[in-house]
Length: 68
Ligand code: SF4
Image 1: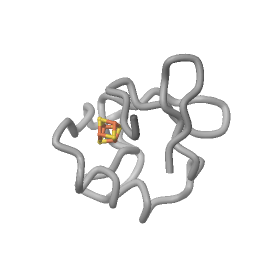
Image 2: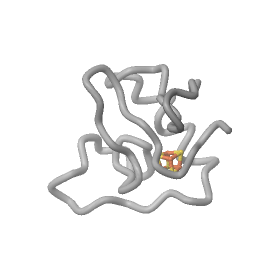
Image 3: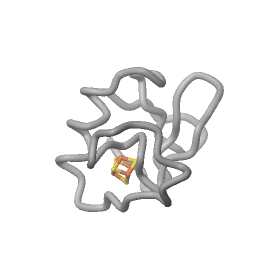
Image 4: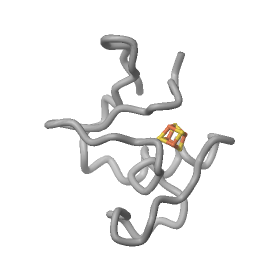
């Protein structure tokens, strides 16, 4: 579900893989919910709502190096 690219890990599911992003965050001890205005899904725990994701054009990268 991740791909290494330029020292970061890119989520391969894109921006609309809500179930996969929630599943990833469920298993991630580093999840920290972002501030309310940055959250994009109603899933209480999702990579899409994590303060350590940084949006890219097509997806996001995990600043904590998920998937390494
Ligand atoms: S974005 Fe990274 S740190 Fe945040 S929940 Fe997902 S895998 Fe974990």
